[in-house]
Length: 541
Image (cartoon, rainbow, N blue to C red; front, top):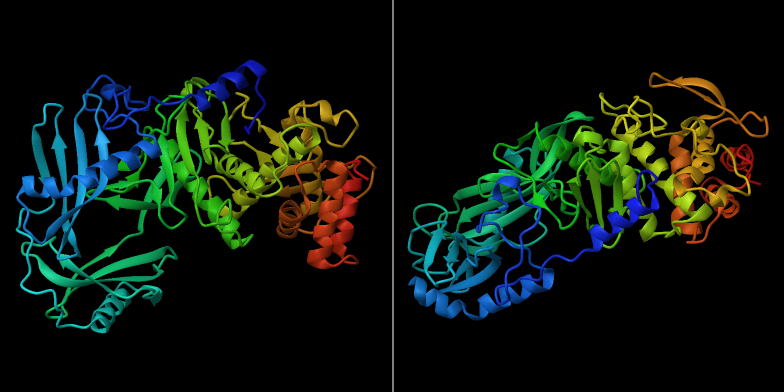
């Protein structure tokens, strides 16, 4: 599901690239080529090869089975054990196994290490601490409730709103400082002062009750994008670097495909959590667009992510070379963005990001078949929610409008990709329904539904909104009075999730939205009557 139409050959190439399999590689298998790596690293044997999910599981299980032997090789104490967290294999055959440690069955915070083993069997080790892991006793003098009290005081000092400890403190060995000590780790959840969710980890000395450490697991950075300007980003800190993983919104990740057309790519990272310039510019827009769409779904529609299960999709920026498109792929549950003609205008504006994410919403709900009239409704749904998210976000550099892709200059002359007030202004879309609509590309058969949404929201005739002039006609010469965008969005969403099916056409969409309006506002309401009037105005009876 793409933002714009493409020729059959281009589409076939794109689909073929997406389904192409990466080389099958694992610790026990022959190495294949690494993919989606920066140019400078492509010829390096140190570039990691790609595991499938199953291969990674197998590699970790194999390493875990050998942990007793590995602990002995490393000279660990009798009460220490290793827990494999990850296994990476380089193109040259070197294997990097990341471990966590336990002591007497307790997690050791700050005791992680990585064993690097060459193809010849030579080992080197990277440790978080060189201290010997040992504590005199595992009996805590300070109770768990005492640790909880300390943690809540720490949260208060951080001005955490609605602070609460959902789970009981866990006993750990704190090894991040010079000498390991028995401690409690408590997680306090709530909201940071700016409204960002908080997950504050507080470590308390189990002997004295003294706070040893506090850490905000949900990092809030900033970034400057091409279209959205400087915006807040929720990032994740790993070691000394930050990455574009949004832990506050289902774990959405933003990857750099580095102009490749397959694979996941490389997770964007940054040293200081201030994202801007170069390849990061598009990444900022992508991550911000996904975050705003998630928030719109949750705060406006009451939906917890695309599938309503709290699990995020992921995004891939810098797809292909001069790729003038963006798309949703349900098989990977991901969104992908090209960089535009000459790799100069990434298709990463907020309405485009929301458009692609909303294809996933449609796939998870009505699953409108992507052809003929249902395909046009599918595309229109993404345009409608793309517009809704743009208005919801209301950034100063890209305020809300009823223009689709107005920032990405996809036509090369500064004009939008699509117009919702009068779809025919793009030269291909239709303002109203006709029996020939089913023969059009779905991006153009979306016109009547986009037009319906505009009329239902704003009404017919000339007006200026956020500095943009509109003049929306009606096919039957009627005057339509809008009910406001917020109500129109609620009606379309309820229709999509409750009344539409995979085969819904325009006539059935009229029925679905009337049913939704009736359910939301009553069948004698002004809203219900406006829905009927707006459909009649685009020749859907």
